[in-house]
Image 1 (cartoon, rainbow, N blue to C red):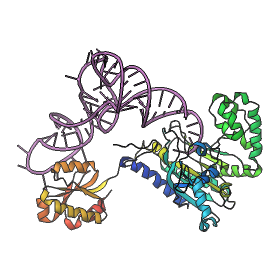
Image 2: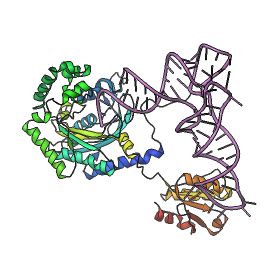
Image 3: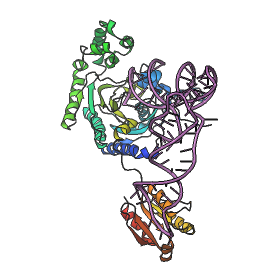
Image 4: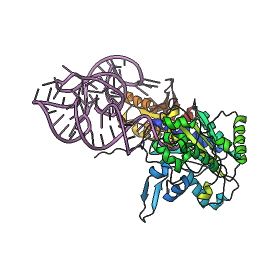
Length: 417
RNA sequence: GUGAGCGUAGUUCAAUGGUAGAGCCCAGGAUUGUGGAUCCUGUUGUUGCGGGUUCGAGCCCCGUCGCUCACCCCA
């Protein structure tokens, strides 16, 4: 009986781990520069959290969640995104939700029961940040600029930052009315799905790629024109902060998000290098969500980025593969015990080291050493045993020298990569 | 949920319906203590699975499973 992995999940083997690590390290570094602190949240929550938080009508909740019953008959769901969990954790923890501003970030797996394709998995990983407690447009800017720093840090080329404001509960209803009116009068041209969207979520019609619906978009009412003065001010402040920081962006008046909780600022980092997908990070402001999930009214802003998508974008320029500090080679099996003892000491000193215990020829051991990408070969034979030395060979320059046993570890530490 | 393409060695791919092969990888070697180049030798398969047509199927037909890409949607 052999087994295969479930559809849409992935094994990431050592050869790709440096790519992964470069991304998560960059995220952590930048989050810390911006004074965000890591929070580790559970991978499952009561289903209600997501249906309330993300919205029952969204695709994520209505058809993409991995939901199951626990033994007591309560419905649990593998998290399809991080924000709802972070909000729940924030609300539940008085230590943090009484702070005037609370900045958190997370890194972890998310689960959505979609058909897998390039850049889209059923179990995928995101890092994201959430900021609670302040409505200042400066924080919208800060969150966007933090993601921008990570993208630059990772050397991602040819990406574009799209921003928009989708208004607040004061001004959005009026816009939605206009939008409905507009599409109602053109209903005959709309595709089947969009006729449904007209009632449930008219904003989404703007996202439709069908020719008929797309054509209507050009003459559709544009959200920015309907913003109340508070939202308009907020939006222009965000833009001027971005311009002031030299961050290029394009306003996309039709940028709407697939999750219900957003208000005011929305943004997406997009590229054409991801096949059918185009966004590698996205987010926005969500001032009502904390309250919807039972907390005190608290403004918030955040984003999430797809780690696998970032891997696709950065794998063309891979970081150095993992390497080993030392590989021990012995000329005769009778010196294996001695070599193993040296190996043990090196590891205790914090030097990564390995050995081939098979007792095969030196040539064979050298080959193995080469494959392990070792920095130094440590050779032990008759001479070395008699002199209490080790021959240390630099695998890059092929130069070698004898070093007394006591000084080997110090030498390697001083010459590590 | 919908559509298209593809399943042959660890991997990348060959094989007019007529004995399943090559490159790479891997393993060993090219004299006596030394890796990456070169050369030599060697290992590896129920051709995804199950039926059918045929004297004969990796190849044709049907089913099934899986993968990939795209739509939808999204990070």
